[in-house]
Every structure is written in C-alpha cells, then in structure tokens.
Length: 250
Image (tube, rainbow, N blue to C red; front, side):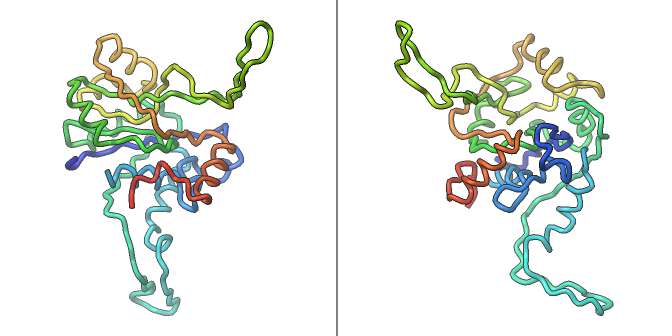
C-alpha cells in the first residue's frame, strides 16, 4: 500500500468498561496479554485520556516485549536485551487534551499527515477488515471519505412466531442494518470539514453525506468493539481457544 499514515483515536474514557478503565485507558486493556492498541497497530502495519500510560507503554516496549538482563551497578549499558524483536513503527504521540471531541482531535493531527490519503480508526475495535481492499475501494470511488460499515449482532436472542406460537429461536442474530465500523480512509481535504469543536460522527460526516462525498465499504466478516467487560472476556476467551479472526498478521 506504500506509506500511508494512520490516525488512531485513543482519548476515550471508556465509561462502560469501568472495571478496566479505572486503572488504565481503554486502548491498553489487554487481549491475549497485549493491549487492544497493539492489536490494532499490528493490523495496520501488516496488510487523551491517561495518555501518559500509552506513551510509557511504547517507551518501554523493548523491555516489555523481550527478555533482558538489568545490571543495577553499571554506569553505562545497564540493560542487555536478549533475542530482541521490535516492531518497525514510527509513532507520533499527540496530546489533544482530555475534553477535546473526536473531530477536534483529528483536526489537531493535520500537521502531522504529509500524504494525500490517510487511515483513521478508533482505539477500541478489532476486525479482520481487508485494508488493501478498503484502500482500493476508496480510490475507485474517488470520494473524500470512505467509512467501513458492518452488520451488528443483536445483543439478544430473537423469537420468531406464527399464529401466536413460537416457531424458531435465533441466538443473537446478525441484524440487517449497517453501522459505522470505525475503519476510515480519507483524503486530506477532509481536514477542511473539521474544527476544534467538531464531533467526528456528527456534523463532519453528515456534511460529507449530504454532499455525496462519503463512500461506504461493507465488511461482512469479523468485527468486535471492545466496549464492555463482557467484550473483553469474550475476546480473551477466543484468544485462549486459538480462535483469533482479527489476527491477520503472521
């Protein structure tokens, strides 16, 4: 795909995930022993709130990911790494303020985006969306933005009836409508649609829609938002069971 930068929004407070986010930001909630954010960055590299903890994680990434020997008395090289494996990532950490809305956060990242096209996603969604296909579709449609849409799954089982009698049960079926799956591709012209007070999902996307400048790429395979503690438990169980559909890297 060449060099395409990705903006990842990591400022959400995760109020519905209070069990985890009271001690860490939502992007650092662990799935399979690694933060959600790491899984998202692996997806992209291979195809505010408590932001200091996110910075600290990556500043200490080499020690967290590898075995090492620490010599407390050494005056020069105190840490010796063993079998060192590091990701080839160039990361810009942008503190956009704790109360800045999503569109304002993206707007503040404008000066760090140097290409005509960039990816954008949230820091709490896992998917096996084909980024090559998403980018190709975006270029084919020739619009300012492309939104990845998914069919949500009902949180409840559905009963079908006939003549007042139950005739079938469907356990949490996939719904017919489409929702925002959070994996975007934009032309940099999108920055002109944003202000410091913009909520990404409100005026900017609605304006693109009204101007017929928002394409929709439908993704019908795996997608899961890490929104509640049950979501975290489900994803960790899938990982432990070896069922990892969002892992598109080797």
